[in-house]
Image 1 (cartoon, rainbow, N blue to C red):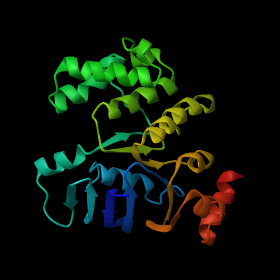
Image 2: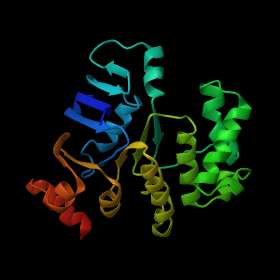
Image 3: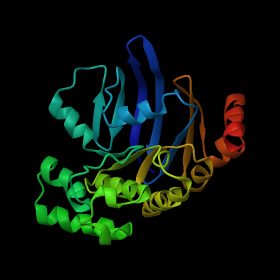
Length: 248
């Protein structure tokens, strides 16, 4: 199986604070990698560097046939091309409140990718139908539940036709009863063969959807393996301690 994503010796600091130390991993095409770990371990920073929202200080990231060595100067055009390889779904949906659901979804394809509006609109309706929200296409974000808004956030990322989908705690801002509908959409994408990297505290969800689990702490990957290895039978004491606390 070919690796869609390759991360090698990734480093990132904010001022004097080192947040990533020599992080390396690969993600095969069509698989799901889940990143877990305590707050402050660098999980979100990993995702943000994969999308170049936070520019790494050093390290190589390759998505498909597009790679960037962050130890070298990178011009703005190459960075935009690199960023276009992945779609990011944030903790908060970050929808434009003055635009309808449909307008939110076609904004990126039309404005950024310069696609024809009719083409982008057809794609948007197909995606909305897939996630069960096509009937809401003319509504505004304030008319939707939190779970529906987050599903629109996922649709907006999918509309950009990325190679890689990135999810940063996609259910953390939701009421408990709304979590299931968002996780259901992500499970559906996994079943379709989307390549995804997901940061989450939903350990049971990770057991169901992940092909690979990374446990991060102190800015490094402490343990990696299948869900059965890392979540059911971790070898590192710190991983076991973290899981006991979370599951309790």
